[in-house]
Amino acid sequence: LPVNLIVRDMVKLYRAESPNYSGVNVRDAPTKDGSSIVDNNWAVGTILGIWGAETGILGATGRDQKASLVALYGPRTTVFVTLDDGVYEFTYGANGVDGWLCSRDRIQISQESKIFAPANMRAAQDLPNYAKLIDYWMTNKYTLRYSGGLGPDICQQFTKRQGVFANPTSESSPAKLRLAFEAAPFGLLVEKAGGKTSDGVSGASILDTKITGIDQRTPLCIGSASEVDRFNLVLGLGK
Picture 1: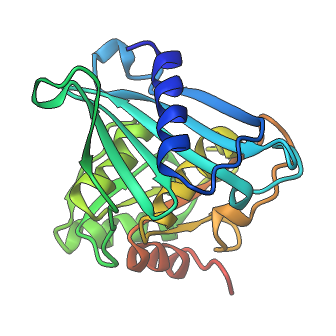
Picture 2 (picture 1 turned 180 degrees about the vertical axis):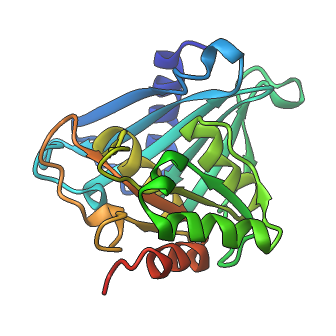
């Protein structure tokens, strides 16, 4: 499905399902995710954050978003979207339905996890504590599920109900994730589902980071609360 049709359908759905939708003009930030793996024909996605016209994006935070959604194009076409009472998954064409069908409702990410997705592993050469954290996950027999696509690597937390995605940065391996277009929309989804986020600098929620530039980049850890806490602890954040 074309991205614009998915966004159109999801905005209609949000208006119908969210009684607090006021009909104000919104500013959105759609991002194609997975450009580095699309030639492999792996799952890729679209990330969309929606800010109200009263705040816009610049000067706002991820917490100011009205809603966010992520579309994932794999064996199934699915969309995860924040509604008033939680995070929902909708699947296109499921069970022979010509349209969207709610396939998961009020998704919850468990506090504990045994699944990890370690991004930017080059940074482990500069950050011994990140290497130590990866070694902890491997030594304790966590399941490694990492594709290099932000969409599938975080969306698995909604389907598996657990997981952690870590993307710290270093001087030689700088931040690549865009705050407004990637980290903040996913942050709203994960925290709405009971997960936790870290800005990778102070250990605070990524939703509290002020957006000062359209192309602003950020480190990120996101997922099951206990694992995000472990990330902050091992990397010495929030001291």
